[in-house]
Image (cartoon, rainbow, N blue to C red; front, side):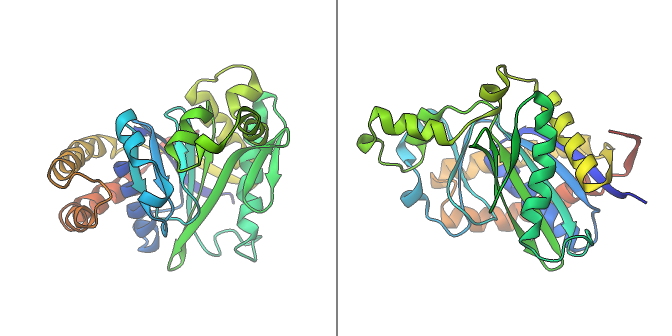
Amino acid sequence: MKKRFRVIDTGHLSAAENMAMDEAMLEAREEGAAGDTIRFLSFNPHAALIGQFQTVEKELRVDYCREKGIDINRRITGGGALYWNSSDIGWEIFSTRGGFPEISQVEDYYGFFCSALAEGINGFGINAAFRPRNDIEAGGRKISGSGGTSLGSAFMFQGTLLVDLDIDIMLRCLRVPVEKLNYSEINSLKDRMTWLSREAGYLPERQDIIEKMLHGFRSRLIIECLAAASSIIFYASFLEFQQGLVKMFIAYYGHIWDPIFFGCFYCISYAASAAQCASLAIAELAPWKL
C-alpha cells in the first residue's frame, strides 16, 4: 500500500507567515496532530532568510532590504542566508523517522528527496540531477538547494527551486562584497547557478511547476498525494490576524528580527499560529487525488 501524503499549496505569504507555518506544522507532526504532508510555498514580498544560527547584520544588507521592500526573517533550519524571489517555489516534506524504511541514515534523505524533485522538473525538458551533499544541478549549475531539521521523531525536509532569479538583487541583498566583484566574477557566479526559466527557455506557470514536482515525488517516493481542503478558509482569517500583529510589532519595535519582537510575537501569536496551522495540516483529506 502506498504511503499517503497530504498536499498543501499555501501560495504567496510573507516571510513571517511562512516561518510560522514551518514551525507549527513540524510541531503538529511530532505531536501526531497532523499526518505526512508536502507543502509548496512562495514569498510576497520577496524575502531574505538567514539560517537558524546566523546574525542578520552579518549576513544581510539590512538598509538595502528595507529600501527594496525585502522581508527579513530567520529559518528554523541551519545553513546560509538565502534570497527568495517571489517567483521561486519552496517545497517541504513533513514526516517521521522510519516513515521511509528504505532510508537507513539521515544523510540519505538528501539524495532520496532531491532526486525525486529533479525527476519532476525534468518534465520541462531540462537535465536536472542530485549533486551531493544537498543540491540539485541542471546542466552542471545549481538550481535548487535543500536542508532540514527535526523535532523528536518528526522531521521537515525543505528545498528551494529557483524559478526566475535576479542575481544582481541577490548579490546586493546578501552581504556579498559586491564592490569587489568585477564583471567577469559576476558572470562566473551566473555560470555556477541557474534557474528554471533560463533552462526551460520560458517561464512556466506556477501550477504547472507544482504539478511536475508532485509527479516526481509520486514516482520516486512511491506515495499517494491527496489535497487538503477544509481548513483553508480558517487559514485565510488567521493570516489577516497574524499580518496585523506583524505590522503592529514592526511599527513599535522597528525590526522584525528584534529579540523583543520575537519574544512578544511568540507569546501572543504562538497559540493562534500553532492552532490554525495545525488545523490546516489536520484538515480531512479531500476525496480526489492530485
